[in-house]
Length: 323
Ligand SMILES: Cc1cc2nc3c(=O)[nH]c(=O)nc-3n(C[C@H](O)[C@H](O)[C@H](O)COP(=O)(O)OP(=O)(O)OC[C@H]3O[C@@H](n4cnc5c(N)ncnc54)[C@H](O)[C@@H]3O)c2cc1C
Image 1 (tube, protein in one colour):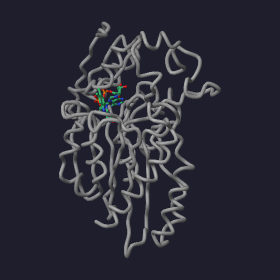
Image 2 (cartoon, rainbow, N blue to C red; image 1 turned 90 degrees about the vertical axis):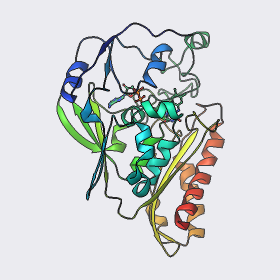
Image 3 (cartoon, protein in one colour; image 1 turned 60 degrees about the horizontal axis):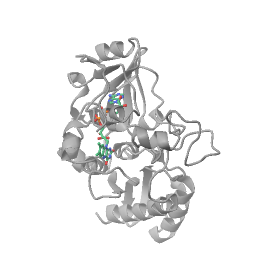
Image 4 (tube, protein in one colour; image 1 turned 90 degrees about the horizontal axis):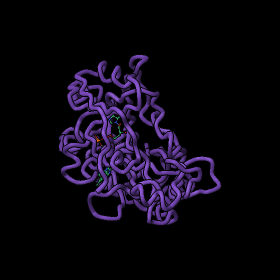
């Protein structure tokens, strides 16, 4: 049993207080549900002198809808996302991904913000301290070399949160608060393709909410493969959103998780729109295999994960077009 190290706990009641607390001295970390942060602290993967518990910040919680779309507070639980009828109806990929996260107890406590800001994962990193010591560490923590790509000057740990790709295919915009005030950015822009610096949030910035534009006739879905049927991160997760008529695609968005150090929005799909599906699908397969970049970060080979992406995409496209 690995023990949780000592730390101070702060419980702000507003976003302003939370941001101010983060600017304090020493190593500080935000905590929402704590389902990822606390195990990481126990394993020595994350250090914090002060943990800022966001669970008393009421402004971070809740799902509000109007004609322009939906605003989801970063402190909203994954369980609420999975059970919300409007999300299930208008943004089905979002509700499906939420339901596929971890197990019921994690979903009751874990939050959207914690899921989006989830640390990247790798089989050389998500290990106990004795294991990592015996294996001479890795670049992500205490070592010099990326074990999956020893000649590389960057870390290839994989982004593995389920929610991000589903929100990205629906055009999500992130609301962020920080020492410099509030700002908004397309959700995809808060991520970077680097296993260590995987978020572009500035020091002290807090994710406040995610805004989804009105559904506008988009159909969407999410599929993931994982080692076990439950309580497991995606080896690959795929979100698809599309609009179609008469068996032809008019709009198509695809995003993946588990494949790269960031949730990856596939580009260049417009050239396949309007084609008969039988012509479009092989070309989409090729494009996907070219753009996704899984490495040996899991026990499942990267080549397998690269080949699974088009399979999941085809499955989703067929399902959504048949709906
Ligand atoms: C056994 C197990 C299985 C799991 N399976 C899955 C899975 O299948 N899919 C999956 O996606 N996840 C999985 N997880 C990870 C985790 O439970 C979920 O991702 C959960 O949604 C994280 O939310 P949280 O609120 O608990 O985050 P926390 O642990 O509180 O925080 C996670 C990170 O986000 C930061 N953070 C939290 N809120 C904010 C905010 N508002 N602004 C800025 N930074 C913030 C924290 O500082 C921390 O770095 C699993 C975890 C376990 C233990």
